[in-house]
Length: 522
Image 1: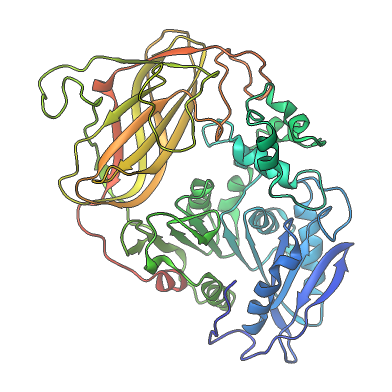
Image 2 (image 1 turned 45 degrees about the vertical axis):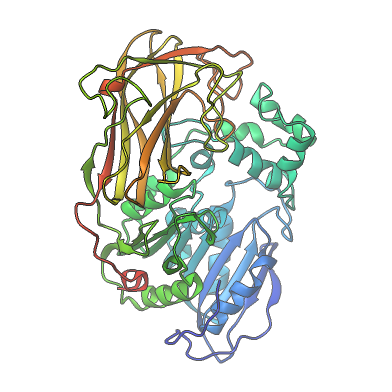
């Protein structure tokens, strides 16, 4: 949390005193109080990433008149017990919330705050704890909503490298080693390619008894199902380049509390500390200051009812209101140098055939399209944009295609090619289809939400593949579970470019600029 001076904090001007460490039902807990008689509203952060890393954040909250509490979740760092990710956070969080409200320095008002897994802790407290333990407001940044939500895409396809990296670093251990997967890949570059995927712990050289549980869980959307019944204000914070971007937007959209605010910028999972290539200086938001001001307004009841917020338009300096959305826009896409290209529009385009071979899967690393060797993807390209184009809202791909295997994943990667030829990934989407081999069918691949200004001269490149490895697990094409499969088959594909439709959301006029702080605090 950044810590510039901020006026109007709940406890008035305050100078923080020393942090003290205690235990709450055995869990290691740091408490930082503002100077003064109190009582104070309290901020609670429950984390598996070491409470001691939040010292500056606690000091920042205390300087603004909040009591600030950081706690190691069960089985992590200073807290004893068994570490079972996503298993104990509701009851442990409820016990801590009741303990806080019973302290003489607490005025009873509580804000649950967290990023990533810590956001899961805040949300379970808000949505699943008994009423006397629920917070009065929630700040959830890049929220990991649950084990099933983090392990799979909304369409069910397995996220491999991020889950393997997280479990290697944090799973079934009291401390963390963020380099664990990198070290395993250095020793064995094919560690993620060995079958079955359930054997990954052996490749890492240590036990991971919770690894199979990751893939047995199919309760995706459990927390989101509770969101309409929320009773407190929400501030949801996300990044366009974060792998939980869709979950952040869905949480904001479905929240049933008295108010919900969304702040989404051109950032990765680290938010302002991880700006994307399309970030501008105007997107460097002082999140700590904004969090404190929003929390004060939420506790004071001065936020307007309903949903509001601000979304940054990457590639420009603009912020727009979160409810602004473009109109359907269908760019023309054809195979490079194909008959029927813009220079020869009256000739037909033949079907595109390629082979999705899990032994040689299309790579998720980099944006290079292989020039030689077997064709492993369908590539379609648009003409250069005659003028700038602002994309704001959902994107999707409509396909008419077939595969010769009973199971097939269809990945779509959308890339912006600048006038200088450099590429920038805009979106990746995927669906899994189970159909009789050889049957041609129409279906949609969702590509998430875009918030991006494209300059004149930009071309759009669409790649359609059968794999996106190692970001996602390989479909073995046999109909078996990709996590337990031990046999792989190549899958021959055919796509009709003439009926392929990329549908974007484009603004017809330049968007009205807004100030993110004004949108969040109104």
